[in-house]
Every structure is written in structure tokens, then in C-alpha cells.
Length: 287
Image 1 (cartoon, rainbow, N blue to C red):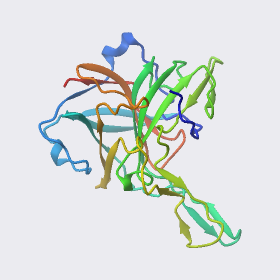
Image 2 (image 1 turned 90 degrees about the horizontal axis):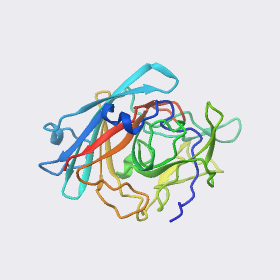
Image 3 (image 1 turned 180 degrees about the vertical axis):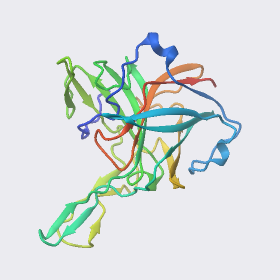
């Protein structure tokens, strides 16, 4: 089935880390995913996760290896659903993204400097996965992109794919690797599309207007990943969950007694290439 074309960001989320090969899987940081005794409520609360051990995942800021951040990740399965709990430090709560600000001199709206906090988690689907999108590897992956402004208010994460290929794709980003090789990066939303619409305003209404508004009704496939983030005491607490098998071609299948590669990224009121990334991770499904 062909991918539904969508606009592509011009910078990769996971773009500066060492390539992973099958021989190095044993040395990757492992996140065990076993059965949960009770079903967590996806509300960003920690209480239900106290008995589940956390894995400390180090992240490095792209282009600035001296800047680091740790994410504490927990995961588990209850019946036919998988759950993830994430916690990381963030001194500021950023829940507005690119608002329109009225410029009295220009007599029009201009884009404001505010950027939302974000958390992305990615799972390999096909090919030779690497957290480094510029490794030269071809692969497909499922990505859940939680956004503090655009998706958190409606209780989901933006469900997308990452496709890295030597073949050009419609609306893909052309990247030149250090060795001169050309690769194409494509980040389509799942088949249902984006969970929000982009607005424009030609006449003044209020001094500040939101650029992104959630859809009144989410199409099938857009609301697969339920999510809720809560900012408290200079930390984000995020819960996400999804069916193990959505029966959608653009979603990863979580299979019992298997291993799955992936990675995570954290955005602290930044976008594009300005963010923290993990190395390639191994998710060990032990249910």
C-alpha cells in the first residue's frame, strides 16, 4: 500500500549518533517490557508505575555532545495494549507552538518565537534500523511524536512513519551524507493524516492567535496512540499506550517474546535539529 503523502520536516530527529549493526545488539541499552499487574490510566501520573523498574536512557544534544539529558523509561503490557511511561527534567513548561502575533507596524500577523516541548519514540519496522538517520541505512520505522501544544490537549501522540531510502520519494528531504552518498528522508503522518489543522488569519482578531487547532473528529488511524503529559516540579511525566496490533500497515506490530530496535528524542522548546537524542535502543518484549 502506498504511503499517504504529507509535508516533511527538513531535519531528522535522530541525526547524529553511531550506526547500529546486528553484531552490536547485545551491547545496546535494553528496555524490558513485561506484563503489568493492573492497567494504567493514561493520565501522566506516576503512582501506578512504582513497582516497575525504570531504565535510565542517556541523551545527547545534536552538535553539542557536552549537553546531556536523561530520560527514565518504563514499559509494560496489559492484555492487548502496550504502555510507556517517560520522565525527564525540563525547567520550563512550553505548551504554545508558533502562535501568530499581531504586528501593528506591518498590520498583519507574524509567527511568534514560542516552541512547544516534545517527546518522540521510534520503533523499527523494516530494513537495517539505526538511530542515526544519516548512517546510510535504509529502513522504515513507526514514530510516536508527542507534542505539548498540538497533541497533548487532545490526549494523543502524532502517529507517523520514518522512511529512509536511496530512492527519491514525493515530498521527501534530500540529504547528502559525509561520504557524498544521497539519501532521502520521508516522515509522513499515518494514513489518517495530521490530528490538527493549520490556520491563517488575514484580519486582526486578538493580539495572539493559535496557528494549530485540533480536528473536531479524528480520522481512523490518527488516534491510535493515546498520550498524556503532565509538567510538574520542573519535570515532564508522560504516559502513552497503543494496541499491540492495530492492523494498520503503517504501525509497528508488538509481538510477544521478540526484540525490537528503536530510539527516543526530547525537544526542549525547540524544533528542527535542535534536540536531544538517544543511541539505538533494544526493546525486549517479554510478555
